[in-house]
Image 1 (tube, rainbow, N blue to C red):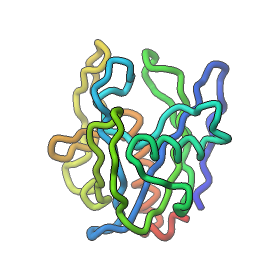
Image 2 (cartoon, rainbow, N blue to C red):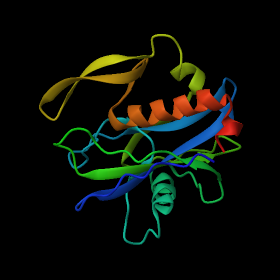
Image 3 (cartoon, rainbow, N blue to C red):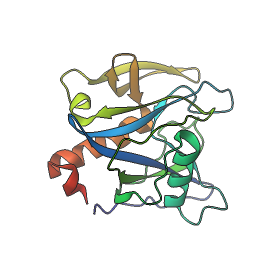
Image 4 (cartoon, rainbow, N blue to C red):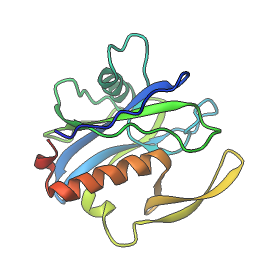
Length: 187
């Protein structure tokens, strides 16, 4: 199992977690993504992400946060899913964003579960590693976000653009998957 490098938490950092749900699809490993609903109270409104969110006081640990958020956002139960690993903690690089530190947990699923979207999610979908690694998918894009326009590395597939922290988590995941050459070897 991959052992993550935890980021030292500075005072005021908000702990959060995401769940990377993986399964073997027709084209090899694939991951579950969400397209966040457009909401004024959501800093990451309208972005593509992994299911997840901030730790609640009732969550005994961050893995429980990832499991709870996935259940709430897309109706997928990960409690009994295979735990494949934990990736490095991430934090936003833009000072206008909340001071969160996000821990990505990787889970393995046997089947593609049915999805039930909450009002926080406008869409949920699976993308194969093969599609994400295809030529021309990873490139730079100009994003206007919170009154700023900047160039970011991104994955662009049809009308979906994965950028920001999700792009960084995904790049780490795909790099790890390439170095192990199989979903089974991430463990």
